[in-house]
Image (spheres, one colour):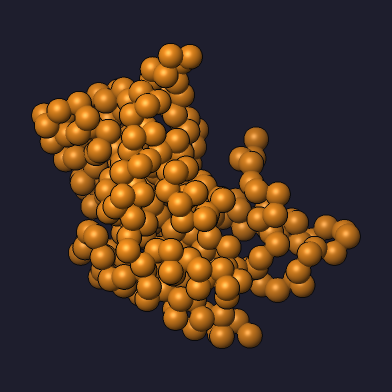
Length: 244
């Protein structure tokens, strides 16, 4: 069954997908959840996160294992949401304002947790989140996570972008005419990790980001590599100009 999308997602032909952890914010949410369990838990989980983000082990191999070690509560997930805001990338809001003015629709595309990302998204004015849901019981204790969500495994981000592109094309092939002229869809992905780099080839432009964590493979293979998100609007303008 197709995953839900915002009702107005197809109103723009320019979609900007942005990673959350170590991109929009300086933390890795899963690592901060582990830190709440003590330094030993933090060290164990951080090592798994680093290996997955560097492409040394598959994301799917560690995704559920980290959560079973931590078993975060609803309250702890919300606490990490505030940490995201406190450590938000300094130029993110400025960049997003410029992108919106230029007609780009931003979406957070992440292997992080929706319940933690929602506060950051609200702070940044982003109303479209593609992230993994956590499940809790009535008391707020951990019950599990959405194992079927694409970003819980390698190849999930390009797969989700492909699904969104297909849904966009369907929306623009239906009658009555769509709310904007049927211009070609333009997609951009911005992120720091290997799972973000995997979208290169699926999007029109992949922008590697190294302002928080500089990953050698991403820097080497990315079409473009930036150190601040404030550099992004110029790249978006260049892509838009090529599309005219």
